[in-house]
Image (tube, rainbow, N blue to C red; front, side):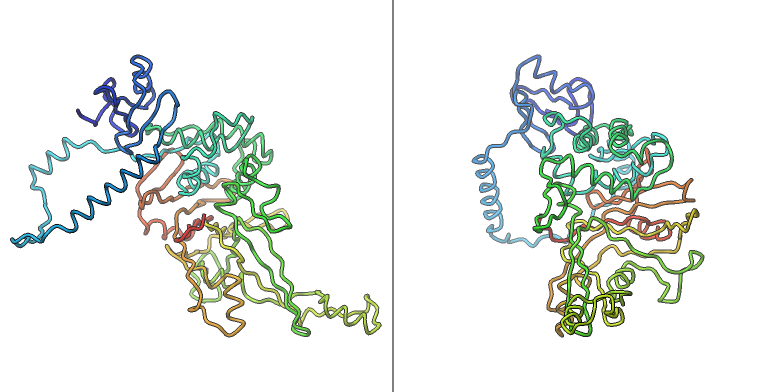
Length: 465
């Protein structure tokens, strides 16, 4: 019994299923010979030969038995314990020497090997200046949390029935990307649904990837059955839709009066963290004041700043009690400061580099280099850290909030005639997605895109999801 190919079309790839009633092996490719075999023979059950998952054709879904899975796990543990308790052999083990094929063996390997398809990776056809959409879609399709949500059937497009539902469109994309097909996919249905929901993104003009990212989150939020009306309502209740559970955090602004020491805080939902660029795009900014790294941009964003024309409510109350009219109360801007921090970090952080700016009718692009790391510890920029430092504590007393880079959206060229590409990490390997083309990459390629980086996505090391 060879599990390498379909018994009918000889397809070699992902999602091959072995019938449990006979020796037939069928594909789940375009012709779906596994399903055809069921209709011809009524053999109900088949096993995915890669994932070892049991599929029931009558149910149309994978089935799991808790008792069976528990017994299987216990047996695997017993076998592992038994093997670990084996007595040490009398003869000493020979020193390990890695095998290197000779020229003849290397030729045979090259001739007889069949490369396995990389599940979940496909290019997206450009439907006419839609590279901005393709780049963001690839970040969603390779995001582990979003992938887990849709691949575990949390939103089934066949059961939803809502016209123009964006969650259904994403669910359909995941099905297409994990069908075993390697050819680029045309996201026509998704594009049409996006045009209907966001009129500002309709048409074939070049659009902004950042604006599309926000529009997609808002639309999927409104279409999700778990969503509440606002990402963070007045009672502090957070939204349980997949997009806000993935990208949603909480910003905090803190205003302190140096006269009366009164402190006021305000919380706002966070789905992105916008970072301002300094310096000239023509050099690498040796001067630290003009250097742009992710850490320095976060330092500037969370630095304490003076507030202009701000009147402290607590001081105003004292003035009024003394009989001073409200319009005569002096502004205490020099005595009031404001600081921003992150009250709650999301599972996936989205940093937006402010490449584009508008002055009057003129729009310009800043191509100053922006350096970003593969890993970052966000503890320093949390509200908790600010409170601890103000009380004389140390950051060493706080837990680490480490994040790892998973996607980088790049913009090349001019504002109106530029092009978007994206680096995404999938199964510990980096890939470059350029519309229909998908190429292998490495972390050095990703980090070298410092003059093009526009959106950077980081995922938390430890998830409370």
